[in-house]
Length: 73
Image 1 (cartoon, rainbow, N blue to C red):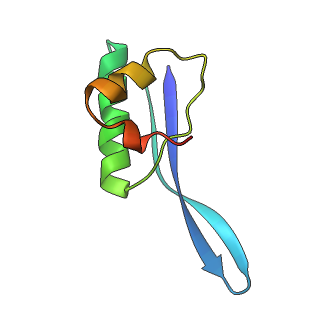
Image 2 (image 1 turned 180 degrees about the vertical axis):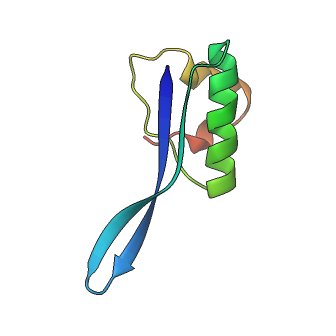
């Protein structure tokens, strides 16, 4: 099971707020299918992914797709 949330930072008066603009939770048949759906979301929303280091598959997947620029440091 994987979940991904896309936040947009908006300024409301003097304060900044994070607003959820997209959410994807699912358990596709393969991890690669999940990674691809997340990659498409990131590209569509021009977002960056904060991912857990213990998940070893997502970094190689994004690197092989030449999309490691979508991964946050």
